Amino acid sequence: MGKVNLYDTREVAEMLSVRDQYVRNLIATGELKAFKLPAPGKPVTKKSRWRITETSLLEYLSSIGASLTPVSLKGPTKADLADSERTLARLGVTPIPLNERAVSLYTN
Image (cartoon, rainbow, N blue to C red):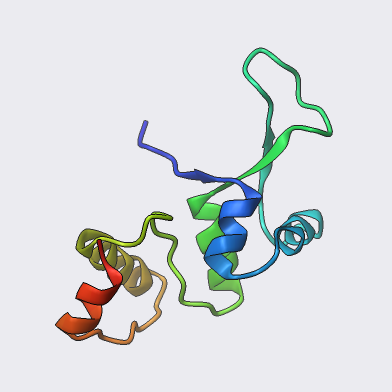
């Protein structure tokens, strides 16, 4: 099975430049699919934290017509940008091309 990227509500909020509560509201209304992940060996409780898959996040963004693609919180690499362009193309979104100087400013 392939690697699945999981994000918590805080990470998704940072990626979308919104508050954590807004992300929790999206989950509560069903607009953003998420699941609760308990601590190892523990049952799911109200205190269990929400987890959002990268696929769920991309589906939500596509549903609102957004062109954001999640990348590492440390900042995107050139490989991340290339992957983002492929993902956007798969979603039918045309990315705005960046010149080499812009790429070097925004990558690790």
